[in-house]
Image (cartoon, rainbow, N blue to C red; front, side):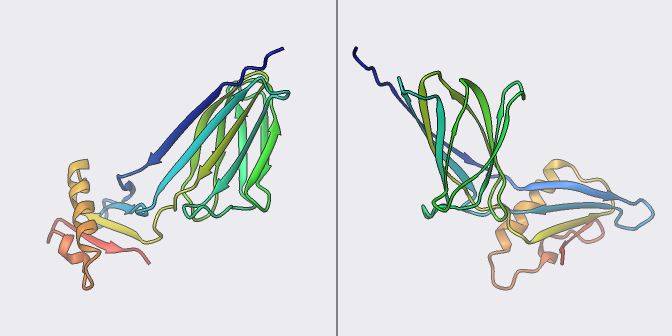
Amino acid sequence: MKHIITLTFYIISFSLFSQNWKLNNIDKTKEYGFQYIFSFQNEDDNNEIKIITVENSKKTELSGQILDKLNNPMSGVSIKIISQDSTLRKELQADFDGNIKVELPSGEYSIEINYIGFDQFKTEIKIKEDSTTDFKIKLGLGQELQIYQIDSKTELTENKISEVIECVNGRRKAKSFSTTECSEKNKYKVTIQI
């Protein structure tokens, strides 16, 4: 009997270029009653995944390795595997070399990884009957720890908030950066949260 091997290869790169911001608080009793907070993504903030599927395997399994951006294995990383209909949930922990291996029924699954200091990773993956699906995931760095705050006298539009974020991003790399450079007198002020 002839064995047919089919290889499927995917490379997916996830990258977040925009900054996260949110309306943190509204207190109309204060002069600057609208409070927005934001932080910047790390420049190396992107996750990557490579997937290879080998069909006509004796088992139906998922195996993989978790790495950082320098290709160092990440041991102890917790990985959640959840079936599309949520009837099957598995939580695994990567071994010393960042590897995991688990037998699963064929179907569609989501893979979730949360690890302190690294960007959250989530993707969908399809496991075929009698196939081995192997992946390599490189985790990008998480958000920078420095958080900025905009205190405004009035509610700001998304465009205005984006302008302020761009101003801070453009000037924060300067050695003598001051948040007052991105504030607008008598309208809003930008500060760094401590």
